[in-house]
Image (cartoon, rainbow, N blue to C red; front, side):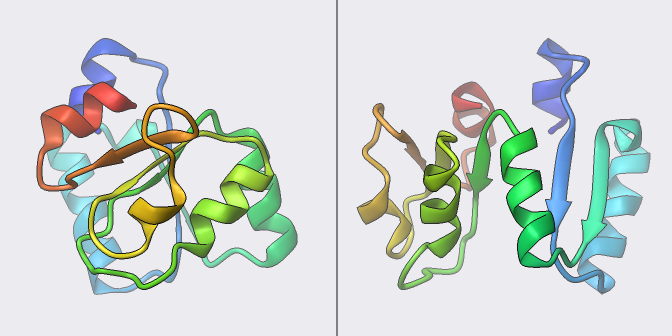
Length: 117
C-alpha cells in the first residue's frame, strides 16, 4: 500500500475480515510506514455491508498466499462489475481472465502487485 500511496495519495485500502493479532500487526505497520490514514480496518462485514464495500471500491484485491481452492470473493466482486487482482495460487487464477476481468499476480511481488492496482 505504501507503493500505491506514493503515486496516488488519495488511495484508501479497506480491509474486511476478523480483527485479530495479525490485523493488529498490520495496524502497527501502517502507522510505522505513515500510511495509517489511508487504511480502514472494517472488521467482519455481513453480506449487505460486504456488497456495499464492493460497490464503493474501484478494484478488489485477493493477494492470498494460501492456495484457496475456489475464490468466492472474486466471483462476488465480478458480480458487482469490479476488476479483481488475485493471487496466482489456488483456484483464483482460474476465475480471473488475466487482462480482461482483472489481473493474476504473484502476491510476493509487491512492485508488480502495486503496478496492477
